[in-house]
Length: 407
Image 1 (cartoon, rainbow, N blue to C red):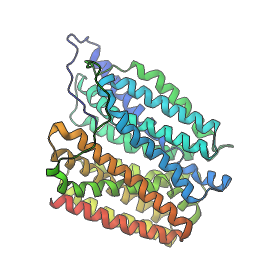
Image 2 (cartoon, rainbow, N blue to C red; image 1 turned 45 degrees about the vertical axis):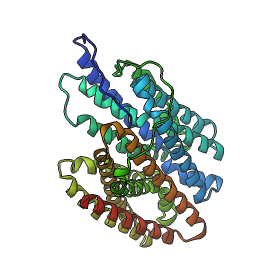
Image 3 (spheres, rainbow, N blue to C red; image 1 turned 90 degrees about the horizontal axis):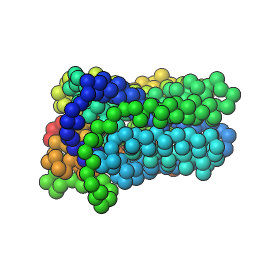
Image 4 (tube, one colour; image 1 turned 180 degrees about the vertical axis):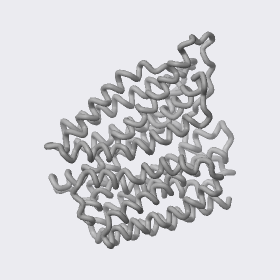
């Protein structure tokens, strides 16, 4: 979503340059994966905070919303600066911010500390996502044998796969720990220090840095000619992120309170499922025509939410997990289609602004429905709240996928 420009290679690259770019590609991919993973480490731990401090579900959603606010602010204020200052400095900034968040988690685990840590983590992720995606493409292009599509696949796996890996590792680390609210953050703090040490070894790809220009945030806009066709893309992005937001925030509480699962490993698996499904689904159907991918998304966005609701009503952890798998796969396809279709709607000079709008709508979907769920859980039975959520998601997701396929 940045204004990434094609930049000239060095005049006389050394024979070792392709090898350095190849190693740097995988280091950057691993860094991307692990930073995204750290951002979801708290997800399976929320029930422990609730049990210890007596937070209500709305408070959990507020803690989560702080992360989303940080991401959105950073996307538009910081993320695009890598075109000017270089990719590596922004990756280092992101890793440093995630390390700062880990330190806050370790030193202050009261409500104020949790909100501050999530906000800082969100700022780091906002600086990371577009920068790392562009960095991977440029590093792969500098290899002796660049592979078409490899950078996009690695970026997708690192992004959604990292978000899914975080809860899995968090649950596995915390389950046997004597202090489960400390050990996951301590382990990741060490990992983040290592990433900060190895990232400076990756070659920089922004070789020409323009002179100082007045700073401005990333613009967010779409031309009037494309607005009508953009509506389905916006609904698709909003709905897909709503699914991911549910599993990043209150799904752990559903699993603990409604399904009676006290295992942090199980909670981590459930929270990870939609993200891993979103990453894997995009890889599995990448060779299919876009229209066929959207047909699959239509089915998944109806079947997935229905299974989620059935998992809470019966109750059945397996059915709830299946719902997350199906809904996550559909959400990933919806968001991928929203990005691709929006990029095709506008000329290249306006593409960054249009894609920024997709992310803005998407992150609104990450926050607004989840906050509404949090408020609903204060006054209404969990099954009713989830039932309303899944009906709305199924209707909106099914409509968006169908509308995108027909337009």
